[in-house]
Length: 320
Ligand SMILES: *[C@@H]1O[C@H](CO)[C@@H](O)[C@H](O)[C@H]1NC(C)=O
Ligand SMILES: *[C@@H]1O[C@H](CO)[C@@H](O)[C@H](O)[C@H]1NC(C)=O
Ligand SMILES: *[C@@H]1O[C@H](CO)[C@@H](O)[C@H](O)[C@H]1NC(C)=O
Ligand SMILES: *[C@@H]1O[C@H](CO)[C@@H](O)[C@H](O)[C@H]1NC(C)=O
Ligand SMILES: *[C@@H]1O[C@H](CO)[C@@H](O)[C@H](O)[C@H]1NC(C)=O
Ligand SMILES: *[C@@H]1O[C@H](CO)[C@@H](O)[C@H](O)[C@H]1NC(C)=O
Ligand SMILES: *[C@@H]1O[C@H](CO)[C@@H](O)[C@H](O)[C@H]1NC(C)=O
Image 1 (cartoon, rainbow, N blue to C red):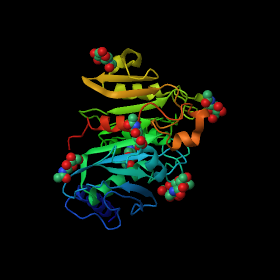
Image 2: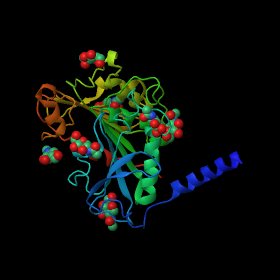
Image 3: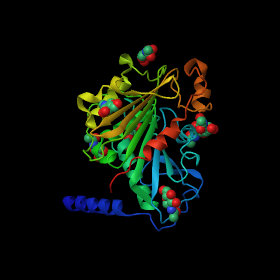
Image 4: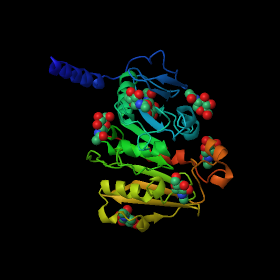
């Protein structure tokens, strides 16, 4: 009896994930095309914010761009910071801003690791989106800022959830060295042909998640995570980042690009001279305004990280 009910649950789960929202009208409680809304995720105690592009077509498979907020920040703030709902950057894709359970994401030692944890939530949210909207399952992408960036790394390190995302980007990532947290203690991405494309941004004067780490706060140097993904992508001993600094138009910025197994630029890093824990933008966004000149001395930055993120993503899709 018990075995039978487990079996039927598994059967229901596999049928559910095979359902597609293509050809169906947008559920009435979703935002209209061109708009955003914060919604509860059915079957959970969690919420998420969603933006549907103005040109959404129920018969056209649509890309999905996740952006996870920093610790203590919320989904609406992340929408403003990332600009993922702005058609200037993302004219055609669905933007998703997941909401933390208690202010932090898995990777932060304060995160709740009990089932259903942030990985389970993300996996469930993806199932739900694919069932209700016309999602291109080959074009689902993960991004995060700070602790949300640490969680983006955790996602890629999980074979089940990471396999659903075509490429990853991290802005000012906080990579906690917490052994009880999947992603740091054990990073086990599922092997896949195209590898794990990763784009990183980090400021050299970041005081919250210092670029060279902070051992007493349990934060790893960014180079450790870059080399981890260069390694998983097959770069082997060639993964020393100093060997491949490319020139960049602005002298403050160093751009580093790894070519692994012939995949040029599969791991890339923008090292932002004189920037703090602020999402790079040529206009002062909420990070520059709230952290101020003492923490982000330039008051804005010399490029828009969001431009580079969508350019990077456009080069990658999964074969599904
Ligand atoms: C389908 O979506 C793509 C972008 O994902 C867009 O370029 C194309 O114009 C869309 N086609 C239709 C018929 O809506
Ligand atoms: C998100 O944060 C902003 C700014 O702190 C606040 O105004 C807003 O009410 C918050 N939204 C939610 C849903 O908590
Ligand atoms: C941790 O998460 C579980 C599952 O969502 C929940 O039942 C529990 O209340 C959470 N604990 C805390 C302290 O938030
Ligand atoms: C990966 O995530 C899935 C879905 O949330 C979960 O069931 C599984 O236990 C995770 N694996 C590891 C090694 O944490
Ligand atoms: C490192 O973290 C500790 C503990 O949180 C903090 O007191 C210290 O100021 C941090 N050091 C730097 C260089 O950020
Ligand atoms: C470094 O760049 C050279 C070309 O300048 C390229 O042949 C080599 O594969 C690159 N190495 C890595 C690890 O990216
Ligand atoms: C950067 O993005 C902002 C909107 O967030 C826009 O106003 C600005 O013109 C963009 N800068 C460049 C150089 O495209």
